[in-house]
Length: 330
Image 1 (cartoon, rainbow, N blue to C red):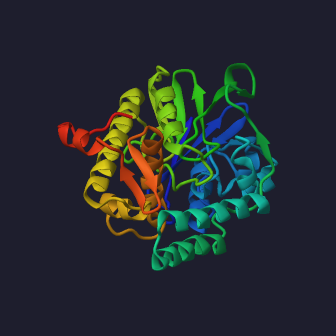
Image 2 (image 1 turned 180 degrees about the vertical axis):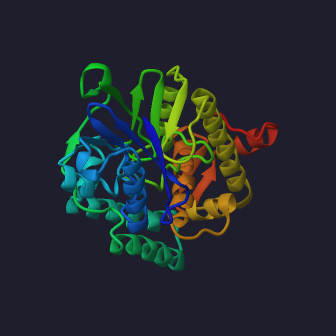
Image 3 (image 1 turned 60 degrees about the horizontal axis):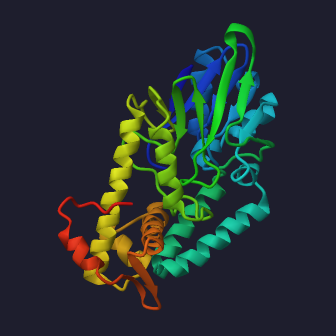
């Protein structure tokens, strides 16, 4: 297996694509559909003696352009089978209804979050620029895969087997792929920053709850190494998964602390307390993350929704003041 690091000037952080070149040539993720990334990927594959036309299969961890963008072009050249989870497959395929539904949900939530008009215009211009540049690439014929399904490629000593794990939170159809004691985690587990929940895919219901379960799946999996969708491999994935859960408990504490000082408040106001000024894609991710936490805390009874915004439930302010570890159990 070869890890290929690809530049990414559209979103932050270098992407990792994984190439298995045995009896069958298989990619996990492809990188974004920009000229620079396409040239990089072609060059790295050529060093392995592989061309786009040689690729037999592509397994996509999720629909975001920096993971799926080049899949359609590669499929057009190679007739490769492209696999993805049913929840993300319509977006990868370029289904117009699916994309219009996603965008309608975004606009409804922008209003609910309290996103100011100038920020909304900047975000929509950023998203439109990506569409105009074609970062999602060509349409894709997608074969869907479900949780627990085993994908088998090639045969004999060169046989590759990948087990699908549905790991929602970052997107509705995010999957990880398990090979022996290693796991390919896409954006479910990253080495340097925490995957966004709430804004990265507004279709996900109860995104934080689902993502915390995903972290448990990884932490309890006994994996020796994780191969993430960005940057370097993670040698202690269980520890990293637990650290990200700790991070979300720290963030929950900060959300409650923000409401203690400025509540009732909407998600945009809480996001401003957490992250400050935002630009480009972070205008979506910041309030989305705040919203995911606020809704999770509301379901737990720690926060109440009112016409004026979210407020702390009775007695929670005192409990927040009493905690000295800067974390709120989730």
